[in-house]
Image 1 (spheres, rainbow, N blue to C red):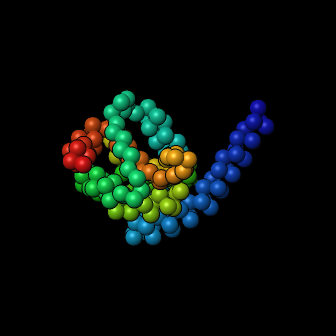
Image 2 (image 1 turned 90 degrees about the vertical axis):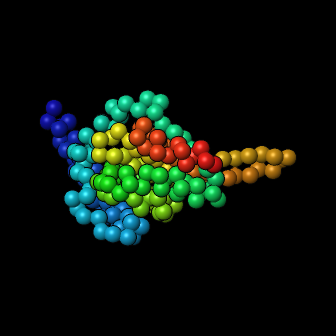
Image 3 (image 1 turned 120 degrees about the vertical axis):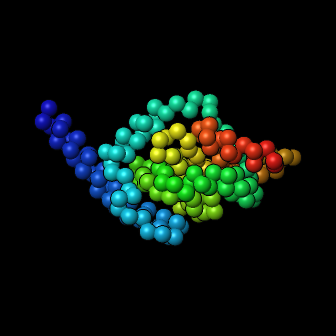
Length: 180
């Protein structure tokens, strides 16, 4: 029993050390993209990150989400859709990226994602997520590659997937989406 506790403690200390190393780099990179300082109080502690993940997995979105797939070459459409919820993004929201999710959860003004989402994706290499403080609304933007074969020619097209969760944010994005 004591061995098990010791192993768990060692595992937790390693996780904290790994977080400290990765978080410093992530914070610096995000400050460059967001063009403002991220304070220590903006970074969610590990225990609170675990609590957030539990709340997120318990969220009741069901089928309340909108998914839009747009070629990377037409990224301005993503910005137009995001601009419909800019006032919601200007408030303090949860923010994380896919590859740093376990180490870096922030509570920050996320309005910069409207214009800098591509830089954030480039930093992470995959996707990022934003959720309001009540975890009733959220979004993620993912970059993936779609493969097409036409007349023995293989074409790979980078695609942004914007997924918006929650009725409040969806109701603001849909009118702009329908205009397309």
